[in-house]
Length: 566
Image 1: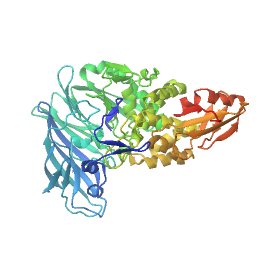
Image 2 (image 1 turned 120 degrees about the horizontal axis):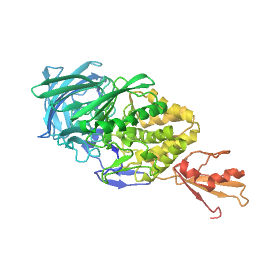
Image 3 (image 1 turned 120 degrees about the vertical axis):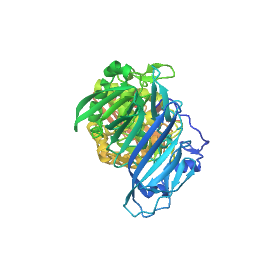
Image 4 (image 1 turned 90 degrees about the vertical axis):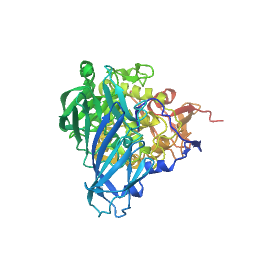
């Protein structure tokens, strides 16, 4: 998605929209959308094993030259004559070599290049080397729109990076630009820059060489990685290191910031260890011990670049709202000023987005809903459960309910609104309340990261895992909150003597079956509403749940007392 991450501006999308029945949105998509977003025959016969990317940017001309070596394995007998390589205009491919020596043909179709790869046997492993050059699309307002970032720091020195979630990694290097195929054997990134600058990348620094006023830095990740997470950071950086004794042993921590920000960064980045302790508790071990954890100051607000999280939150707590040049608490409760939003949120994506990745970006709620909920869990871990509840309820005001959270599959289309953050987070909070056992809920979060470790997944896999492990069928809850826009309403009325209450679901999908578990200091009440009226006998304390805002604060629903005679 695009970093978007943040946010917090509703995304402006191009396209033609037609609204149909409630919760349904029709949109016209092009052939180019299908090529980019679908797993077509030119993509499915081969699996990426590794990317080795070399790039030399020129700050003055805003151009790059590069070479990408793709190591791949033949995984299907249905071997087409071509393989689809994605590289977005105006970048141009100059030549392609097969296994280091054979020049092969290719043809261009907008942002797609059809490469005529030789016929290969099943399970064989080969390489193509792609030489390319040009002026990559420049990001105007990163991270919300993507591309290469050419900026200057406050001392007027070049400062460069890339933000490409949603837009795709093919905006700056050739690849199979689809989330379902991550390089199983990791990736390397070689960046050549003037020797007055430093280049930082994902993972660990493997080598540095200098010659003729140029320096080349080679970084490497051992673990699978999303295409859009591989990025260079180029600037006048300094760094320091630390370690965390985590669940899998000693985790290397590295921090890279512009030289004049070192002192305030060393103070602010203490939130990194706090974050790691909280999230290892809730989600399980940090997923990339082999590659370490880094925070890198970036010329944009922030992004979840695996093992090299981008940071641009001005070294202050809260969330930096650039349009007003001020820090804000997105929940409006005050709890968001207790911690640095970008450190917490973007690092939370190491578990949900980088460890567990949706195959199709239509399912980006898997990334954003759980990571948005990680903010609630971080708040609870350090400030108590009530604080977490307040934070989660506070962000609910940002839900817009204009489009379903899950978008259309196969066309590279993520949700059209920020509801995959806030609505999805509130849905997870609902599920937690229904499970009514925080240890079990925590085991489910940890189990997701263990079961789908370093994997790409579908919505169905995640939904089914949660239902199976909780022993509660949440299928209709997922349908209601991910695939529809209506907010369920609990209608109720009392008997004349106030000894009985009747209730039912309205404004919801058919067979919606969310049960409601309610607690007070000394009473627990569980009800099972359906779309037919049900009646239960009340004890005195039970009525308080219906006469207060308890239900609406703990569940994303509305309530309405009705007149049974109407």
